[in-house]
Amino acid sequence: MSEKKKVVVGMSGGVDSSVAAWLLKEQGYDVIGVTMQIWQSEDACAVEENGGCCGVSAVEDARRVAETIGIPYYVMNFRNEFRKNVIDYFIDEYRKGRTPNPCIACNRYVKWESLLRRSMEIGADFIATGHYARKEQLPNGRYAVRNSVTAEKDQTYALYNLTQFQLEHTLFPDGAYTKPEIRRIADEAGIPVANKPDSQEICFVSDGDYASYIEENSDYRAVPGNFVDKDGNVLGRHRGIIHYTVGQRRGLDLPMGRRVFVTEVRPETNEVVVGEGQDVFAGRLVCDRLNWMGVPEPAIGEEMRALVKIRYAHRGSMATVRRIDETRAECIFDEPVRAITPGQAAVFYQDDWIAGGGTIL
Image (cartoon, rainbow, N blue to C red; front, side):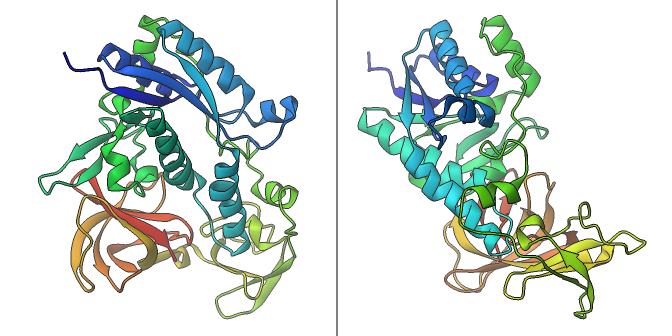
């Protein structure tokens, strides 16, 4: 009999990754549980406040789960990788007037690149997570991330940047289940976090105050500037560009007598442009930092039809995607879409799998 395949499961202490580990063990894999130590503070109280996948409670919960299902468990230190590829990137993007997606960066460079490398060094064949996604090898031979069976919890958008090598060595056991099914499996298996609430915020900014986090963790200080309309007329003063993102309505504190929205952030002039609701809609975007997943890299000028998602919660809009040059692609939407936001990802879907994607300029 061939030796069982070894898989390292990234365990956050939540129900999804816990059930992923249980499912893989039930399928006959040699499972090892690992929690990635990514918190930056040595102070236990500060770490605990982070919560999510960064806090001390995550380690304790994951350890209890590993003991319950009978698998070895370790904590691996990824502080430096997380600081460089996630926190520094997060801060730098906001300073540039863009809205980053740290989960995408963490997936690509920490959970997959760093964790996969260390896992293979200890003899693992695969890594696995509790993401609601599926992996499929297409007829063209390429691996692609495919939508999970549940649209409500589908997490494929944040996985568009994975490489072919990473996907080849990845398992997504939860992708075939809905969230209620995952909780039921956990309850029936006696997994102690069966009813643990989901983490909602970015793990290292637990209170959602991104601007304060940036100032506390860098030498950047927000500089007040002008709110302007699209013609450059000054409408009022803002608190600093890191407080704003395209499409934002709340927190502007502008006495306009009507609803207005952020339509653009201009770091070069320290201006925040606001406009009417219709001004937030656009029919075209350009993106760079491209990653082609389910399709081979298109030739310059080549076009394809795709459902394009421009943020995690976006249901997607049909568009024609065209490769502009070596580094960029454009999406021409059939209908205008709301709040195309620089720094977020544009992810191209064909049927229910990811063809590719990039970062919106």
